[in-house]
Structure formats: structure tokens, C-alpha cells
Image 1 (cartoon, rainbow, N blue to C red):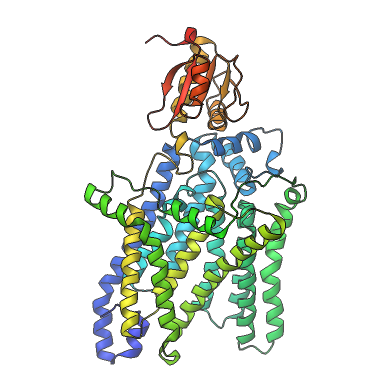
Image 2: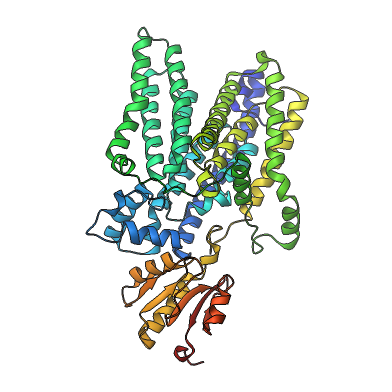
Length: 532
């Protein structure tokens, strides 16, 4: 027999049997609650550990040096794809308070991680009492390796995703707990408006998905306001509309308005050209990369063999289960099931409208579509849609079988994500894993060989400048002359040993350091090479 929600048990069984069932189910409920709290705390601890251990990447370092480091200039207001305004502002606050370190520049991302984990825990417990759904759904929301990288990296994607999720979670909570409370509806609408505006401020590529979420949330709130049993229904709708729009507009006015009005054309050049590419990059990033230190060879082999089937199967089973639910008798659906379907429609509708808007913007204005990190919002919205469908109580044998297969696939996906946990590198910047040690080598040459002018490949230029700021003890000037083209008059170079091998050979440079985990090399003129 499937585990079902406690309120459903009470309504569908005799009183004595309900009491026995609930008493027997309480240990499972407590165990699942404890497991969820443990998973949430572990995820936060793991994110903090990564923030302390991982080398600062070029994107993170360049953003700090350009938009935060100089105290005499408020550079964080200037528009650039590399400048994530809300993150830069927080970096200035935290580095001013606690000094510069990899951890302090990543505190804004960690705050986003804490918010995302807390909201995911809140939503998971709200959607279902089934421990068989709760645990794998929470893991898939939080431990997705694509998302987890941006819980750590000092970029705006993780915080923007967390705020978007919060904007959806608050009205959903209001819908479940206070369906006929006008004041709660107004407050929930205001909080959602603030969260969507802050999400956009954290990362401008969230504009379309934020507007899509705002559109659906406003329409939903107005519909619910109309249904509320109050004598002044039209007045309530106007108040809800004002609460849904004015807080967000105030945030935009106070924070990114100047940046947006002074945005220079031609700065947005990253992205894809098709919806297929958008989805492909999200799937690829979500399946990166099994950790052989966690998965023993048997588990590794099985998960690696089935990984390409996991997400398509998960989505396919969710579609079939939804069709079975819709085709079933409407009279058999309880109130909770109807609410879950509304939540699923809200999440999927937000995703569908945002992707359609992106596609139209590309068609008419040649604005590139999101891919990789700019498409990060796809992962939680799809996961929440699937979670809402999986939480609906089945009312037919076919639906029960399909739901069982869906939960099995969701659990396998959760296991895969857990086996992808890593401590030492980001997927998108794995080639910079050794940049901190590379800087230490360069610093040695500055102190012991008086080398003070270094040419750094664009792969490592931003990170090298960050570590110079962090150390403050070297008289180093880093230059970058372009992709794979470098001046021949430098004494020391930080290069990619694969892509720039020809330059190293032509200049007869001696490689004095080669990163153990990447292709970063430090190369010098032979006369400067350190003694063996």
C-alpha cells in the first residue's frame, strides 16, 4: 500500500483504523524529517567547505578586481555581463567588514545557497508527506551538480535562482495554508514581487524568467482575490495588484535603474541559438560528473551506463503520470491533489513562457538564448514540476504503477547527484583548478628572480590578478594580450599547456610548473629557471 498524506488517511478510513495508521506512520515521518534536515545541513557545510578550498576562478577574480577592489570608485554600478550587481554590492560589504579572502568574496553566493536550501526544504515538506517523494525530490533540487557549483562560485546565478524559488514558494505556502486569507495574499504578493526584482538584480539574464513568474503569480493572485469571500472583492484585487508590482518596481528604481539606463549595446554576446541547445546544456551540466571516490567501481559503472537515460525517462514518466491523472475521474481528486496540479502548472508555465519569450527575442532581435549557466533556472523549475506531479495521490492501477516507476527514477537520479559531490573544482572552470598554486610559483619568481611583469593567458588572467590583490606582497603586473597571442618579450608566462604549446616551443620557454589537475603551466626564459 502506498504511503499517503495524513489528511487523506483520516478522511478515507474508519476512525480507529486511521488512528492506528497514523500512529504507525509517525516514525517514518520523524525519520524523513530528520533525514531532510541532515541533508540540508550537510549541503550547506559542503558548500562552505568548497568555498574555502577551491581556487578562485578567473570570472570570480576579474569581477572582484574590476567592480569591487578599488575603494575610491563605485564601479559596481557600471553595466557589464561580468558585473552581477547584487553580488558585487555584497562583496564590497563583506570584504570591507572581514577582509579579502576566497570565503568573503563567496559569502553572497553562500547566502544564496542557504536561502535556496531552506526554501527547497520548505517546499518539499509543503508538497508532500510521503518520505518516498520528499527525500529524492529534495536531493534533486539541492544536490544537482549544475546548481551546486553556483552555491559556491562568487557569481549571481545561485542567488538569483534562490530568490526566484522563494518568489514561487511564498504564494504556494499561502495557497496551501491560508487559501481564504486576504491579508496573507497581499503580503505574499509583495514578497514575491521583491524576490523577483532582487533575483533580476542578482543576475540580469533572469529578466525573462522573472517576468514570466511575475505574470503568472499576478494572474493567480488576482484570481484568488476574486474568489475570496470578502464584500470588497474589487478593492482586494486592486490591493493585490499594487502589492504585486510596486515593491518590485521600487527595488528596480533603487538598485539597477542607473545601470540599466547606462547599459552599452553589444555587451551581451554569450548564448545559444536554439531551444534544443538550451536544454542540452542544462542536461549535460546536471549530469557532470560522477566522483570515483564516492561511487565504488560497480556503482560507478552502473550509474555511468544509465545516466543518459535518467532525465529523459524522468520527464517522460512525469508526462505519462500527468496524463493519467488528468484523464482520471475529476471527482476522485481531493483538494490537495488539485492544489498540487496548480503548483505544477505554475512552475511549468513559468518555464514555458520564459523560454518562449527568449525564442521570440532571438527571432526578432537576435538576442541569444540562454545556455549553460544562464539557463540554470530550467533545472529547479523542471524538478519542482515533476515533484508536484509525483506528490499527487494515484487513483488507478495504471497511475500507481507509473508513479512507482517515476519515484524509482527520481530516486536513481538523486543517487546519481549525490555521487557527483566534489570539493576541488567547478565544472565550467575545471581548467583553473591549479591557479592558486600557479600563482604561488609566480610569486616565488617575483621575490627571488625580480620578475614583475607577467603575461597571463585569458584562461588565468582574472584569477592571477585576484591572488595578487589577496597577497598584497608581490610587485606583479599581469598583462593579457588576447587569445593565444602573446608578446615575445616577457620573462615569465602563465599559459595553457595544450592550447599554447606552439608558443612555448617557438619561444624556447622552460616549463617550471605544470598543474597536476589541469593544463596550467608557468613557463620562463631558460636563464631564469629555478635550480632543480
